[in-house]
Length: 473
Ligand code: NAD
Image (cartoon, rainbow, N blue to C red; front, side, top):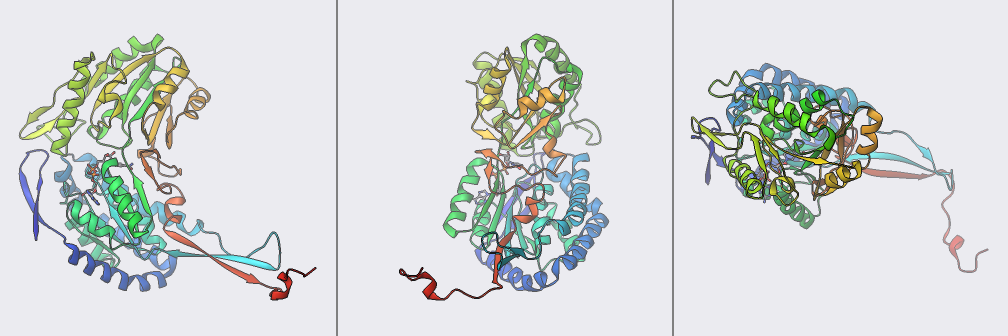
């Protein structure tokens, strides 16, 4: 038995202990889910939709309890509440879409109309979901909801850094009568690795380093792995951009959730002719951002959830400064009441030789570079091993679109930043090291949990072997 402890990001106290699920616990849970899976599939889409509607209602009834625990896990209150709202909204969104996403019926063959085909969609019996600490509820449920609707059962392994929200959520899951088809196993990396050995497909959200291990383990088990990994999202601000709007988008896109979001803006390229004015506005706005300390009910940004992340943020700032960058505001990780915090940190005079321009930072740091030609900005934006998302700001949508089409990333926000956090209807893949597998957004987010089976019918006569004789006419 391994006992784990979770730290409160506002106090630094290790005040929550829990047992990590071992291999036999996972095996038992997997057997139970698989046994219930047949009835779950037999319910049909309508029946499953009704049950998920009950889940949305139950989560609504337990909103406060879930949000409160999530708030301790993450050190922020407003976003915790929004995670719960967002989960309920996501269920309703999928309920509205799911009935329209699968083709039905027979199609005549093109080569031989007598041979017809029809699709059948067969869900993976058991899907494993492994989630990170930055949006503990959202990223546990984002793949779970469409997987359940598709007819899969689901086992979730949330991050060991943020385990508290699970208990009240499980109460809602039980109340909705879904505990036989949806369960959580708590634990760290070892529990995640064990989970991969007991499921038929795995959805992983987390770092590239762990994603590689998950991909290798899934390949060994010959199961699909859907990987949503890190990013180093660029924002390109063209000369024609409205500086007020662009600096608003840059700041929000970089520092919302303390920058602990995969789709956060991590580097900014600004046309040289507007660079100085843009920087003045950005720094002024960055300085008005408040920590939600000491009162969790005020301010815009919360603590650094994962203590080790604070060291990474400071290392990126120190490395940049050592190589010639200037800190225009912010710059030092602060300790308040045992928690770690970083005010929005704007850096100028940065280059692609600095870690802050190359590695995922995952914090409220805004390194800004000037560019002369649009082609140079596009090349800089693409000079990365990541390809999660990106953003372009310009005076017109056409101009932003023309640049956006040349950026190698799965989602590009035009005249805003980080829109993939707010808008989940468009399909998108993760480019380069940012992930692999089908889109989690849009119709594919549901369809990818169903294996395609083809029923192929001959309405004419089967060909005899003689039709294939070497000397047949
Ligand atoms: P992480 O990779 O450290 O951990 C993610 C999960 O994997 C945790 O639950 C962890 O316990 C588990 N795990 C660790 N070792 C494992 C193993 N060997 N086998 C199976 N599971 C294992 O990531 P993190 O630090 O929790 O989260 C931050 C990262 O997540 C950042 O890189 C961020 O960009 C990424 N992220 C990506 C998206 C996206 O949609 N692309 C969204 C949010 C976060």
